[in-house]
Image (cartoon, rainbow, N blue to C red):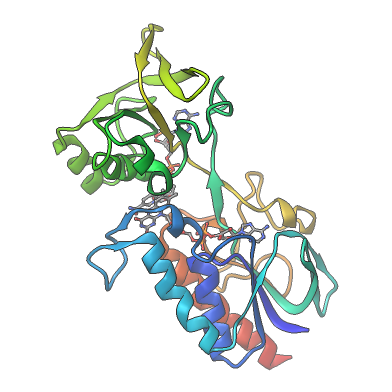
Length: 303
Ligand code: FAD
Ligand code: NAP
C-alpha cells in the first residue's frame, strides 16, 4: 500500500512526487511513457524562472533526476481506471493493480486533431503535432502550421530554423498567442500568415504530404497550396477518461479542485493542466504539484 500514487510524470506529477517524498511518504509515480509530459514536445522554454532558455527535454531531466534520491518509485504503466474504496484507492493499469491511501491525478492534456481528410492518412508522413520531434525531417520544405495560440506561434518560430518557409494559417484575423510570441513571429521574415482560413483537406502522394486545401471562412474561397509538412496546434483536450466513473470531471473532462488541489472525492487530488483553470503553464503545473504534495502529507499525517 502506497501513501500516494501520482498518475502522470509531467511537471505537475514530478513536483507532487518530490514534495510528497520529501515528507518521507511511500510514493509511486505512474507513467505511460517517458518522464516529462508535454516538455518532451517543446523545443525552447523561455518562461520558466531560473533558466533564460532551456529545451523541454532538458528541463524534464532536471525535474526527474532528484526523484530517485528521495525514494520515489517510478512505475511504467497506462492507467485505465481508479476505484475509490473509501480509506484507500485502487489504481488499475496495464502493468497490474496498485493500492494507495491517496491518488494525485496529473495526466495533463493531449493534442486535438483537425478531423479533416488526409490528416490521419498522412500522420507521420508530413502531418505532425510535435515540431521538436519531427521538425528536422522537413529541412528546406515549405511548412504549414495550423492554429493561432501559443503552441502554434512558438513552434512556428522553432520551425523557421529548418523549413524553407513557415506559413501560419489561423481561422480568425487575430492571434491568441502571447504578445511576445506574436511580435517575434511578425518580425520573422520566414513566417507568413494566412488569416480567416481553415484547412479542408491534406493531400499527398504515396510517400508524403504535397499540398493543403484551404478555405477562407469570410469569402468562402477555396485554394490549394503546395506544402511539404503540416504541423497542427489547434488546442488540447483533457486526459481524464480513466476517472470518468468517479464523477470528478466537468463537462469537458477538466477536473475542478479547491485551492488545496482536492477534488470532489476525499483523498483524490488533481494538479497541472488537467485541472479546470485559466493558465496552463509549467510554472502553474509545478505550483499545483507542490500544493498537492504538501496536502497529501497532511492528509496521511492526520490519519
Ligand atoms: P503534462 O505535461 O501533459 O504531463 C502529463 C503526463 O501524464 C504525461 O507524461 C502523460 O504521458 C501522462 N499520462 C496521461 N495519461 C496517463 C495514463 N492514463 N496513465 C499513465 N500516464 C498518463 N508551458 C510553458 O510554461 N512554457 C512553454 O514554453 C510551453 N511550451 C509548450 C509547447 C507546446 C507545444 C505545448 C503543447 C505546451 C507548452 N507549454 C508550455 C505548456 C506546458 O507544457 C504544460 O502546461 C505542462 O506540461 C503541464 O504539465 P502537466 O504535468 O500538468 O501535464
Ligand atoms: P490554445 O491556446 O487552445 O489555442 C488553440 C488555437 O487553435 C487557437 O488559436 C484556436 O483558434 C485554434 N483552433 C482551435 N480549434 C481549431 C480548429 N478546429 N481549426 C482551426 N483552428 C482551431 O492551445 P495551445 O496553443 O496548444 O496552448 C495550450 C496551452 O498551453 C495554453 O494554456 C498555452 O498558454 C500553453 N502554452 C504555453 C506556451 C508558453 O508559455 N510559451 C507555449 C505553448 C503552449 P481561436 O483562437 O479562434 O480559438
